[in-house]
Image (cartoon, rainbow, N blue to C red):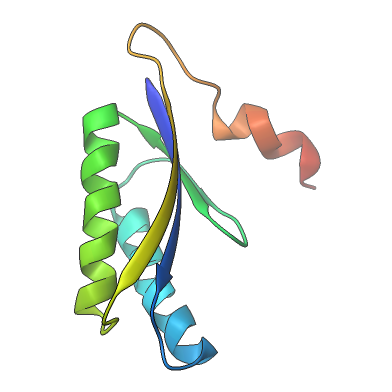
Amino acid sequence: MEASVAIQTLPEAKDDEELIRIVDEVIDYIKSTGLNYYVGPFETAIEGDYDELMDIVKECQHIAIRAGAPSVCAYIKVTYRPEGEVLTIEKKVSKHHR
């Protein structure tokens, strides 16, 4: 695995329930990719091939719009190591969870 991203998708929504519904659609899409992911309270981390992850990041914005958001902001963190492995989600957080 050469890359990992953390994405926080923030759709414009009329209320919290609508915001959660739209974000849940984005998370469902991420789950459907088959890649390793971790949903946190502010962002979702995903591991995989760099180009595939960039396509997923782009599609997350389209999904939020198709789900009814008039606009969407995204905050993205990327770790990329083309000649090796990046630290995995497991190595980063497993010791902090029961």
